[in-house]
Image 1 (cartoon, one colour):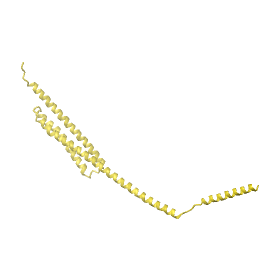
Image 2: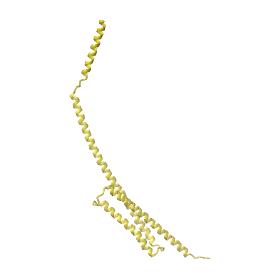
Image 3: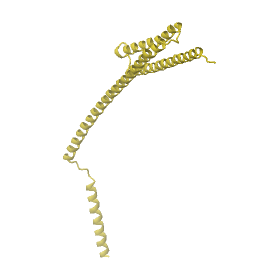
Image 4: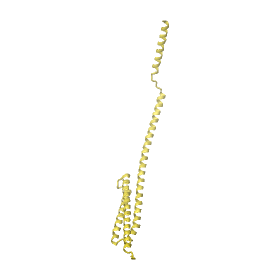
Amino acid sequence: MKHQIKVLMIALATIFLTSTKGMAQGMPVYDNTNFISLTKSLVESAKQTSQLLKTVEFLKQQKENIDKVSSVIKQLKAVRELTRNNQRLYALVQGDLRNILNSPFIKPDEVSRISESFNAIIEQSMENLDFINRVLSSNTLKMTDADRTEILKEKEQESKEMVIEIEHKTRRYKEIIAFRGMQYKINNRETDY
Protein backbone atom coordinates (compact mmCIF):
# COMPACT_ATOMS: atom_id res chain seq x y z
CA MET A 1 0.00 0.00 0.00
CA LYS A 2 2.88 2.30 0.71
CA HIS A 3 4.01 1.68 -2.73
CA GLN A 4 0.59 2.69 -4.13
CA ILE A 5 0.58 5.90 -2.09
CA LYS A 6 4.02 6.78 -3.43
CA VAL A 7 2.87 6.23 -7.01
CA LEU A 8 -0.27 8.25 -6.37
CA MET A 9 1.76 11.13 -4.87
CA ILE A 10 4.17 11.16 -7.76
CA ALA A 11 1.27 11.15 -10.21
CA LEU A 12 -0.45 14.04 -8.43
CA ALA A 13 2.79 16.01 -8.24
CA THR A 14 3.34 15.49 -11.96
CA ILE A 15 -0.19 16.63 -12.76
CA PHE A 16 0.08 19.76 -10.62
CA LEU A 17 3.50 20.68 -11.91
CA THR A 18 2.61 20.27 -15.57
CA SER A 19 -0.70 22.10 -15.24
CA THR A 20 0.92 25.10 -13.54
CA LYS A 21 3.48 25.31 -16.32
CA GLY A 22 0.62 25.32 -18.85
CA MET A 23 -1.03 28.25 -17.09
CA ALA A 24 2.16 30.26 -17.05
CA GLN A 25 2.54 29.79 -20.74
CA GLY A 26 -0.98 31.12 -21.39
CA MET A 27 -0.12 34.57 -20.00
CA PRO A 28 0.25 37.18 -22.76
CA VAL A 29 3.73 38.60 -23.07
CA TYR A 30 4.28 42.03 -24.63
CA ASP A 31 7.59 42.67 -26.27
CA ASN A 32 8.23 46.31 -27.19
CA THR A 33 10.52 45.41 -30.10
CA ASN A 34 7.78 43.32 -31.72
CA PHE A 35 5.29 46.18 -31.29
CA ILE A 36 7.74 48.67 -32.86
CA SER A 37 8.48 46.39 -35.83
CA LEU A 38 4.72 45.83 -36.32
CA THR A 39 4.18 49.60 -36.35
CA LYS A 40 7.02 50.07 -38.84
CA SER A 41 5.59 47.39 -41.15
CA LEU A 42 2.14 49.03 -40.97
CA VAL A 43 3.62 52.42 -41.88
CA GLU A 44 5.52 50.83 -44.77
CA SER A 45 2.33 49.11 -45.97
CA ALA A 46 0.50 52.43 -45.87
CA LYS A 47 3.26 54.03 -47.98
CA GLN A 48 3.07 51.19 -50.51
CA THR A 49 -0.72 51.48 -50.63
CA SER A 50 -0.54 55.22 -51.28
CA GLN A 51 2.02 54.59 -54.05
CA LEU A 52 -0.28 51.97 -55.57
CA LEU A 53 -3.18 54.43 -55.48
CA LYS A 54 -1.03 57.05 -57.22
CA THR A 55 -0.03 54.47 -59.82
CA VAL A 56 -3.68 53.53 -60.42
CA GLU A 57 -4.57 57.21 -60.88
CA PHE A 58 -1.67 57.66 -63.29
CA LEU A 59 -2.75 54.59 -65.29
CA LYS A 60 -6.32 55.92 -65.48
CA GLN A 61 -5.02 59.20 -66.90
CA GLN A 62 -2.89 57.34 -69.41
CA LYS A 63 -5.89 55.24 -70.46
CA GLU A 64 -7.89 58.45 -71.02
CA ASN A 65 -5.02 59.86 -73.08
CA ILE A 66 -4.84 56.69 -75.16
CA ASP A 67 -8.60 56.86 -75.72
CA LYS A 68 -8.27 60.48 -76.87
CA VAL A 69 -5.45 59.57 -79.25
CA SER A 70 -7.44 56.60 -80.53
CA SER A 71 -10.41 58.88 -81.19
CA VAL A 72 -8.22 61.36 -83.05
CA ILE A 73 -6.74 58.54 -85.13
CA LYS A 74 -10.26 57.36 -86.03
CA GLN A 75 -11.13 60.92 -87.04
CA LEU A 76 -7.99 61.19 -89.17
CA LYS A 77 -8.75 57.89 -90.89
CA ALA A 78 -12.29 59.04 -91.63
CA VAL A 79 -11.01 62.38 -93.01
CA ARG A 80 -8.43 60.54 -95.14
CA GLU A 81 -11.13 58.25 -96.53
CA LEU A 82 -13.36 61.26 -97.23
CA THR A 83 -10.51 62.96 -99.07
CA ARG A 84 -9.86 59.84 -101.15
CA ASN A 85 -13.54 59.54 -102.03
CA ASN A 86 -13.74 63.20 -103.05
CA GLN A 87 -10.57 62.94 -105.16
CA ARG A 88 -12.00 59.88 -106.85
CA LEU A 89 -15.28 61.72 -107.36
CA TYR A 90 -13.57 64.70 -109.00
CA ALA A 91 -11.41 62.46 -111.19
CA LEU A 92 -14.48 60.55 -112.38
CA VAL A 93 -16.36 63.74 -113.12
CA GLN A 94 -13.44 65.41 -114.90
CA GLY A 95 -12.52 62.50 -117.12
CA ASP A 96 -15.77 60.69 -117.74
CA LEU A 97 -18.05 63.71 -117.90
CA ARG A 98 -15.84 65.32 -120.54
CA ASN A 99 -15.95 62.11 -122.61
CA ILE A 100 -19.71 61.84 -122.23
CA LEU A 101 -20.39 65.47 -123.13
CA ASN A 102 -18.00 65.38 -126.12
CA SER A 103 -19.72 62.33 -127.57
CA PRO A 104 -21.59 62.97 -130.83
CA PHE A 105 -24.37 60.68 -129.60
CA ILE A 106 -25.43 62.97 -126.75
CA LYS A 107 -28.12 65.42 -127.80
CA PRO A 108 -27.73 69.14 -126.98
CA ASP A 109 -30.73 69.18 -124.63
CA GLU A 110 -29.23 66.24 -122.72
CA VAL A 111 -25.91 68.05 -122.16
CA SER A 112 -27.40 70.51 -119.67
CA ARG A 113 -29.35 67.79 -117.85
CA ILE A 114 -26.24 65.58 -117.56
CA SER A 115 -24.11 68.52 -116.41
CA GLU A 116 -26.67 69.52 -113.79
CA SER A 117 -26.91 66.01 -112.35
CA PHE A 118 -23.12 65.73 -112.04
CA ASN A 119 -22.82 69.28 -110.68
CA ALA A 120 -25.41 68.56 -107.99
CA ILE A 121 -23.30 65.67 -106.72
CA ILE A 122 -20.13 67.77 -106.77
CA GLU A 123 -21.88 70.62 -104.91
CA GLN A 124 -23.12 68.17 -102.27
CA SER A 125 -19.57 66.90 -101.91
CA MET A 126 -18.27 70.46 -101.44
CA GLU A 127 -20.94 71.18 -98.81
CA ASN A 128 -19.95 68.01 -96.94
CA LEU A 129 -16.30 69.07 -96.96
CA ASP A 130 -17.22 72.52 -95.69
CA PHE A 131 -19.34 71.02 -92.91
CA ILE A 132 -16.53 68.65 -91.91
CA ASN A 133 -14.11 71.55 -91.82
CA ARG A 134 -16.46 73.43 -89.44
CA VAL A 135 -16.92 70.36 -87.24
CA LEU A 136 -13.20 69.72 -86.92
CA SER A 137 -11.97 73.28 -86.54
CA SER A 138 -14.73 75.02 -84.60
CA ASN A 139 -15.29 74.74 -80.90
CA THR A 140 -18.65 76.47 -81.16
CA LEU A 141 -20.18 73.08 -81.84
CA LYS A 142 -19.74 71.53 -78.40
CA MET A 143 -19.09 67.93 -79.34
CA THR A 144 -17.19 65.08 -77.86
CA ASP A 145 -14.63 63.21 -79.91
CA ALA A 146 -17.09 60.33 -80.22
CA ASP A 147 -19.72 62.68 -81.70
CA ARG A 148 -17.21 64.07 -84.20
CA THR A 149 -16.11 60.58 -85.17
CA GLU A 150 -19.73 59.55 -85.69
CA ILE A 151 -20.39 62.56 -87.94
CA LEU A 152 -17.22 61.86 -89.90
CA LYS A 153 -18.26 58.24 -90.40
CA GLU A 154 -21.69 59.38 -91.66
CA LYS A 155 -20.11 61.83 -94.09
CA GLU A 156 -17.64 59.16 -95.19
CA GLN A 157 -20.56 56.85 -95.98
CA GLU A 158 -22.32 59.66 -97.88
CA SER A 159 -19.17 60.28 -99.95
CA LYS A 160 -18.95 56.57 -100.79
CA GLU A 161 -22.57 56.69 -101.92
CA MET A 162 -21.81 59.73 -104.09
CA VAL A 163 -18.91 57.91 -105.74
CA ILE A 164 -21.19 54.93 -106.40
CA GLU A 165 -23.86 57.25 -107.81
CA ILE A 166 -21.35 58.96 -110.14
CA GLU A 167 -20.03 55.59 -111.29
CA HIS A 168 -23.59 54.39 -111.91
CA LYS A 169 -24.50 57.52 -113.91
CA THR A 170 -21.26 57.34 -115.87
CA ARG A 171 -21.86 53.69 -116.73
CA ARG A 172 -25.45 54.44 -117.72
CA TYR A 173 -24.46 57.32 -120.03
CA LYS A 174 -21.67 55.24 -121.58
CA GLU A 175 -24.19 52.48 -122.25
CA ILE A 176 -26.54 55.03 -123.83
CA ILE A 177 -23.67 56.33 -126.00
CA ALA A 178 -22.71 52.77 -126.99
CA PHE A 179 -26.33 51.93 -127.82
CA ARG A 180 -26.77 55.08 -129.91
CA GLY A 181 -23.46 54.41 -131.63
CA MET A 182 -24.62 50.93 -132.53
CA GLN A 183 -27.97 52.34 -133.76
CA TYR A 184 -26.09 54.84 -135.91
CA LYS A 185 -23.96 52.08 -137.46
CA ILE A 186 -27.02 49.95 -138.14
CA ASN A 187 -29.03 52.82 -139.61
CA ASN A 188 -26.15 54.10 -141.78
CA ARG A 189 -24.70 50.84 -143.06
CA GLU A 190 -24.31 50.25 -146.69
CA THR A 191 -26.29 47.46 -148.16
CA ASP A 192 -24.89 45.39 -150.97
CA TYR A 193 -27.87 43.35 -152.05
